[in-house]
Amino acid sequence: MKIDYVDICVGLAWGDEGKGKIVSHLTANEEYDYVCRWSGGDNAGHTIYINNKKYSTHLIPSGVFHGIKSVIGPGCVINIKSFFKEVEYLKENGFDTSLIKISPKAHVIIDEHIEEDKEKYKEKLGTTARGIAPCYRDKYARIGTLVGDCQSIFEGYIWDETLAGKILCEGAQGFWLDIDYGNYPFVTSTNTISYSACSLGFPPQKIRKIYGATKIYDTRVGVDPEFPHELSQNEELLSIAEIGNEYGTTTGRSRRVNYLNMDKLIQALYISGTTDLIISKVDILEKVEIYKFIYQKKIQVFNTIQEMTVAIHNIIRQHDNLVENIILSRSPKEI
Image 1 (cartoon, one colour):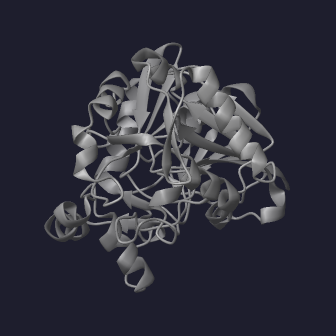
Image 2 (tube, rainbow, N blue to C red):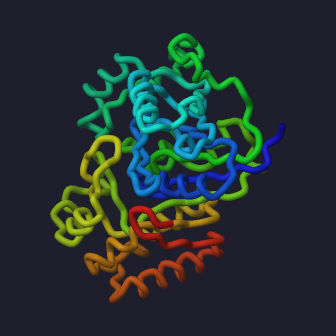
């Protein structure tokens, strides 16, 4: 069998951009054979809606909600307890967990990784304390534990195939958390950008579409000097956070809000190769009647959402027609 094509959904900001919603929409309307995750661990999360019911996952790809084989790739790290807790959650809600597969080359998070994360990195760098960084360190030091070394534990879930047919890759976190492109060291421990999806086992020539996700405003959890404490004292931004229900799927931590940074979005579009840009939560700004974004390091102010979105379109089109399509969506279920 051969690979027909690969579509990728990638976050263009700091995570929490609505990637799960996009993947759910795509898998409900396209005939994919696989939905795959290429990086990270249970430090990320997706919230999706199926038949008006809300579901959340942290590691297992969203294809499982639509009866599609869901692969956790070799670039991921697996917390055994967290994985099986998620499997039970899916079983209890009537989903076919036999569709879930893990690459034998993925690495296993052990208790020592979690304890080290709590002691060294949680407060200093704002990590989720899930043991992600220590696990990746051991991977690259060549002393880690592979899923393939734990066959009996993961019996029935080991992926012993090669990719074929139509594939959708599900990104975790966002562009500006990438270890190479983010505000180091306030980043995650792996590559979050679309090109690293090729680690799942396909050549870049097979990529058909790259769906880039962002919100109409920026959010960030954890420590980052680019999101200073002063933002939490801005009444406008606080109202956006409250109406937008800005809390992390995985940790429940409140997200710090800022106006959409168009300069960073344009850079993320260039490097990620986004073909279809999806900007969500437009309705949140309509509810608070605050229409602003940052462009060329200055805050731009608009009277209506129509004025603001036209300006977004025009700026992106001025930059070599970066993307093929720009889609504006509302929350929580519309694409």
